Length: 112
Length: 112
Image 1 (spheres, each protein chain N blue to C red):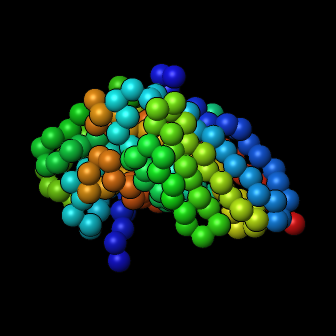
Image 2 (cartoon, each protein chain N blue to C red; image 1 turned 120 degrees about the vertical axis):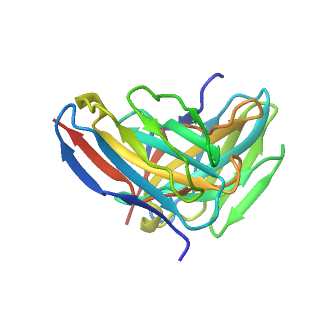
């Protein structure tokens, strides 16, 4: 089944404790991105990747890192999480930047 | 228009009503316009990807039109059903960018 998976789905952590949210797609998509969803603000892009080893900042990259060592994986890293990073996170992928985005199930993160 | 704007913010209709929403986006360097349907507790799913001025797309009772010169798109739902209840997102891609910019969505509730 073609899909985008994210793990974990839910996470409660404390300020400063490094965490990684994994994202994997099995559709051979070149374009992958991370979004955060906050009430009243819509989906805002954190980082995106056009292909392996090619990543770039989105609209709200501060406090986040990503890597794209393999085509299928695009992990989101929070080196030192803070409470303002409490949010719902979505990973998405598509064949190209203009193509329809396939979204993962979302990760709800709470930073205390 | 610098950002992607959607109206109305929310809408409450009765079963059988037809309805429509608006997405306004920057018209300069237009490349693509996406519509997504986002049900509560699920992930956004693509409805349409539109690229040509005057484009019209249809999927069942849902259709969309695109005017790239004036920077707007309409999404129409004919004969709304309770299962149409969701948030409808649009996203714009400009030729100079490598990322989609999402609007904040129109939340539709259809009651019996």
